Amino acid sequence: MMNELERVKSTRNAWVMLLLAGVFEIGYALSVAGSEAFSVLSWSVSAIVFFLLTLYALSVALKTINVGIGYAVWAGIGAIGSAAFGSIIFEQTLTLLQVFWLGVIIVGVIWLKLASIENIPTSEQGLTSS
Amino acid sequence: MLSWIYLSIAVVFEVTVAISAGNAKGFTRPGWTAATLLSGAIATYFLSLALLTFDVGVGYSIWTSAAGVGIVIMGVVFFGEKLNWKKFSGIALVIGGVIGLRLSGAA
Image 1 (cartoon, one colour):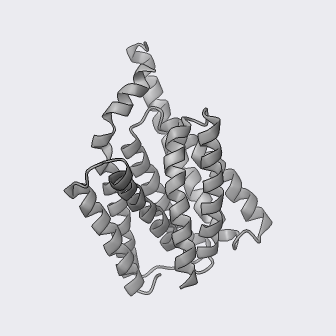
Image 2: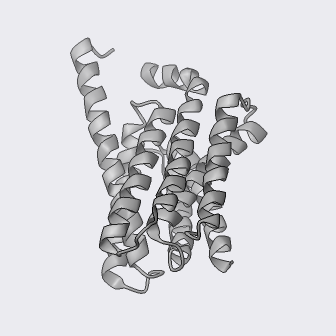
Image 3: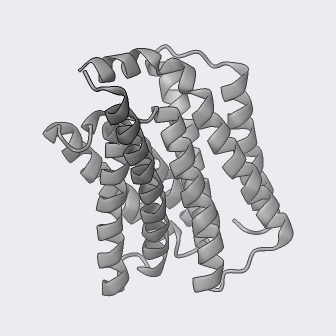
């Protein structure tokens, strides 16, 4: 059994890991786009590195954080970040209307992930007791 | 049109990434870890093909959101989860947003 202090520490570390996973996911999305279907070496290597980093960080974070909340935050950071930085780095400008619809999708996916929380409690209990 | 097919294939493999990553437990389980990496590689390749046409913000968001919808549908069809109004409204938002993007010329 973990004591209270260790529990708080491990929760905090898991959230740092989740935010990192979100940042890595932005790097992954931009690299995949920059790789031009894996024909540009530098972007391709960076895509593979970010792919491994984001999966690892997410997987570690989800050992502690509820899967629904974890995926919601991760997907939200990735989607907003790639749209924002994509428009800057690749000069892919979006119209205000397109930004609105993009927002609808992102709200939808975050909402969807949060809606699946109620199915998780049994596996959460299984995790903490193991 | 071809870019939508690439994106759809990428979505299917992203659903298997989500399922296997959830079971890989910090990459401590070899079988699930291998399944995660393999389906992730396939999903990534088809996403890269789709992103030759789509802007990254648009293509990536549709990809990750459609995978989210796919995961919920898998849960309902194969794992006996209930489709409550929250999930239904989330799916409706994603689909509505994708149609909106299509009509606004972004996709």
